[in-house]
Length: 258
Image 1 (cartoon, rainbow, N blue to C red):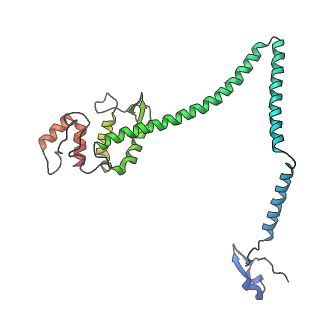
Image 2 (image 1 turned 60 degrees about the vertical axis):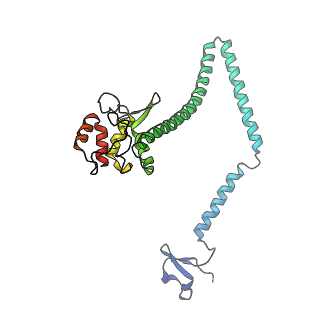
Image 3 (image 1 turned 135 degrees about the vertical axis):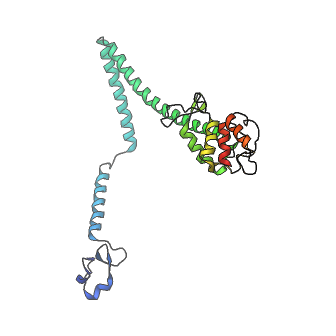
């Protein structure tokens, strides 16, 4: 007697054959290599029949003949168009012929133009990112940017700056409104943005960035190395007040780094 492949419950399996079955997916199946259910076998056979019928549709068709037929069809369409145009010209409908030609040419131009514009925009985006990245890293390095923070700070810069006439300019979150600098009139410079970041995200910079680092925010500390008057070892109240008056951005940076 042939063994049955599947039983719904263990109780249905003859006692002498129970050791030959294993439970899978809520049923008891014959434990044998290469054995599949009748359902799977029927499905496989049906798929083969369907595929065979589909292949029969292309039996005897030569790919070269198909290409030749396509070429011939295109030539026929061109000849038909020429005949139609000749008939329109003979009927005095020259304007229609010109309009149809312009429409076809415009469609082809739009297609080509769309590809060119997409490539241009992609290249512009990459160039913008590179220029902004280089500019912000250069400024931030002057303030002790950590090498491991480059990815973080460039990501932040790309969300704030755009190239305007080849120069990075900062914008608000809407991407349209220019972000003002500390004077409230001029757009925020990249140097001012980095100065603010030293205070807002000090973890991006070395701990000693405020002492001995060259400032670049303008004012008294813009082109010289300074001691940090907010640090315990170089605490100087007079220098603090003087710096806060002449260069608030640098004062905030040094205070955050203290």
